[in-house]
Length: 264
Image 1 (cartoon, helix red, strand yellow):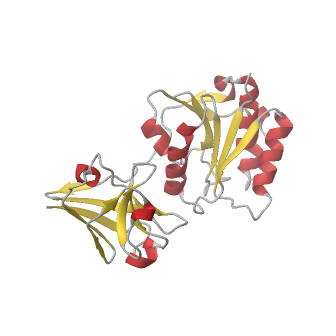
Image 2 (cartoon, one colour):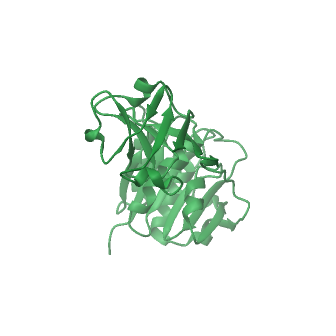
C-alpha cells in the first residue's frame, strides 16, 4: 500500500521553526506519512492568495492526499477548524474561506467542524493551531480515514467568491490576481472568457498599467526583449510577461490592478 501523503500550504515562511514543528508533530503520529511542501510563502494573512494557491495545486496529487492549509489571521478566535472531503482529496484548514477555490472545483463536497479534541496536541496554544490542531488532525486522519470521527457535519462553512472577469460591450475587465516571483502578472482572464486570446489572428488590445499589449505568445522566451506580452500560463490564466524581466516593474502594475481586453 502506498504511503499516505500530507501536503502543507501556509503563510509561515521558512525562517522560523513553525513548519519544521508541524512536520515533527505529523511524523510523531504517523512516521509512514510522506510530507510534501506546496509552499510556505502565501502572502501573510492573505486568504485569497491561499485559496488560489491550494486551488491550483491540489489536483496534481494522488487521490486520498490530505492537504493541510494554514493561512489563519483569526487563529485563537471563535473561527472553526474544519475537515473537508472533496473529489477524493481531504483538506484540514481554518473555516475562513481559504478553501473557496477548492469548493468551486469540487463536485462532491462534505465538511465537518472539528470538535474531537482528543485528536489535538495538548495543551492547545492560542497562537499555533497549525501545530496543535491542524497537523495532528491531518496525521490521525492518515491513519484512520474516519472523517466523521473528527466532528459534526456542517453546511454553513465560510466561502468567498474568487474574482471573475466582467464583460461590457467589446471590453472584458479582469484583475491581477498575483505577481509571481519572476514579476509576471497573473490575471483572472482565460481563453474561456476571451477566446481571441487563444487565436493566432486575434484582434485585441490588452491594457495593464501603462502598457497596451497586442501579442499573446506561446511561452515566455518568445516575447521580444523588453516588451510586455501576454502568455497563457500553466494554470490557464492570461499572464503579462516580459522576457527575462519583471512585467510588474515594466508596466507599473501589481496585484489588484485592472486588466482589460478590448476586442476589435
